[in-house]
Length: 89
Image 1: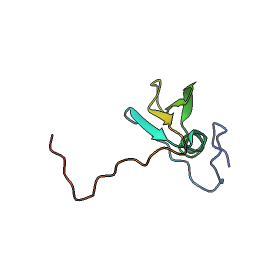
Image 2: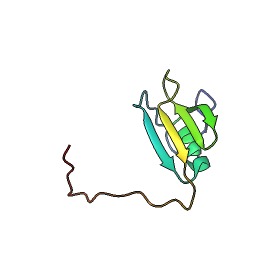
Image 3: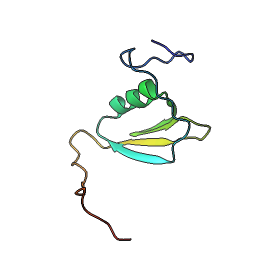
Image 4: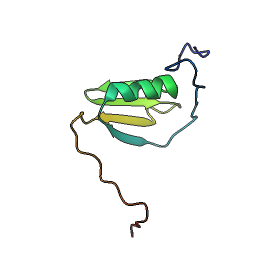
């Protein structure tokens, strides 16, 4: 199923979510192609730049709202803070 821009979601059954703007976000991902599909096919982001293992995506007039950095499938898991912990600044 395609929207008015000719973008189809992954299965054709998930309604397209359309963020209007997201603050600058930088995410490290293990599988860049997988997350590229999610951001472009499910959320409707456009690719603004691809350099090496980095992908810049936008949903606004900015150059990018989200930057993805591929770190590889064998990368260590991120440090997870317990939900009952607090951080003093």
